Image 1 (cartoon, rainbow, N blue to C red):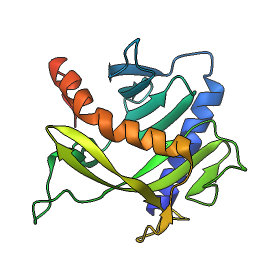
Image 2: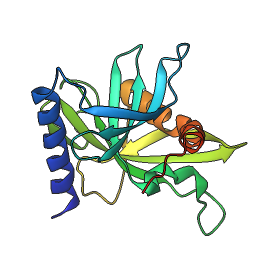
Image 3: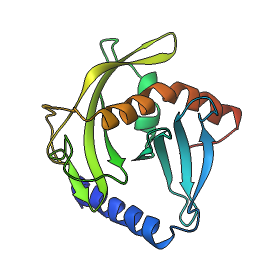
Image 4: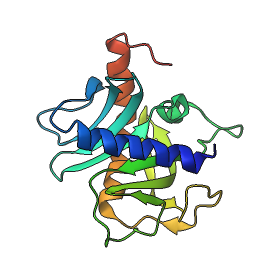
Length: 183
């Protein structure tokens, strides 16, 4: 099964779970960077019925939510330098939830009802243990692309990508302090 089918199947499962179990909390928050003073957060969540892990970037003030299926590579992205001592680009899929069509960047990635799955190509640096995003972020018009020539212009998408990247070091510390063992 190719990556596109896997991602779309995951999105369909997620969308179905959200609709069928809307009244129930189908996820458990294992760790979060959320505070009362900051509407932006990154969390590690676990799906209760099968134990699958996700990272979720949220801007509560703007009602923005995205999901990233947990993968150690995406979790540890800022810890690993490339062979020349720099940080390689972060390439991953982000699912933007509860989105309406007719907005900028609709042509990127793929749609499953109100879930927009977008491939992300992000450059960054790390200074003093903090991730510094090198904007703009890039994407492609499909999920199989090997080249990311489209600039992401949607400010909501940019915001969630930035939250995901910049909150990761803090989430690492919180997960470590809780003794959570990750695959």
